[in-house]
Image 1 (cartoon, helix red, strand yellow):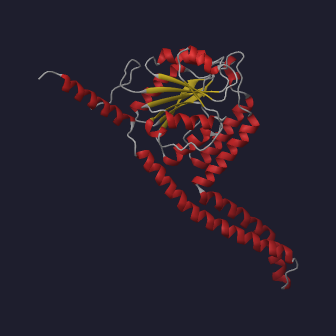
Image 2 (image 1 turned 180 degrees about the vertical axis):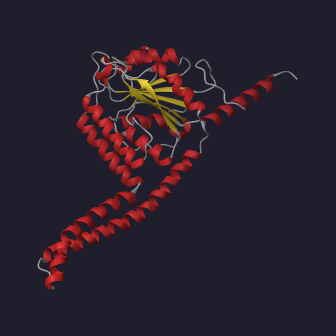
Image 3 (image 1 turned 30 degrees about the horizontal axis):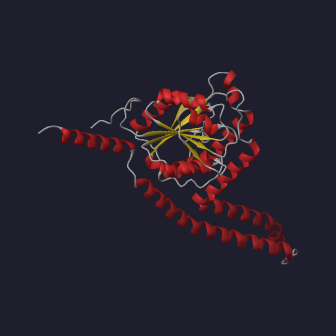
Length: 339
């Protein structure tokens, strides 16, 4: 049976648009009106993350429900979203009016047709004037961290920090969301790579913020948080590689320090620098201990990965969900027909 093609006027699927907001009163009306136009049957929910402007009032003026998240940080917001909202398809988009709402139907269609669990809006500037949407520091950091993630975890994503994602219930209800801030996108991307979750990137226009609206991202502070998150997830997901690298570094240091001592010992039979020899021995002991830690934690990481994978597989794919809804609808129609 062919999978039904999604249409925006089709009420079969429960689609929800999630808008994380922190002081987005200026940009929010444009975002709401755009998504109401392209996805009229989808439910829009604003998550107000400790805003100090009238973000909540603007949402309520447009008859949009507001959920308050007092803990400041995008990670807290997304964790609350995934815990509280139940839907077939989730559209997660930053409420800063920089993302193109008209890309959403294509992203949803791609998710369904290819039976994916996540489609990411890969940001592309469409004119020289809108190139300012990507600040120079942000563009450099994006390329650098994408390069690191590709080398460490796999060459799949070109824009791991995109705030525009469409994903399934299967992903939403199996993703742990452990981080607190802007590094949540890093956790999402590495989680997908670790479990080999079917994902795809689709280019989407990326525009500058409306006048009077300002980015909350701090290039250096949040950049260091993201770097820490990548290293932390390397330790958690690939402990043998992490601790093995430390072991190799310490062993190399011991080797460099030990060459002169070995040469002197071969010539004279004496060890002239006892403190250096002690340091070399300590480095080798720590290197060996690091290797043992990596081996043990690698087994633990494997068990954790299996547990996450089982939680992921506990939910139906989007195509299976659609087929089940069609069967249920058909059965209901047959039961209401006169004998």
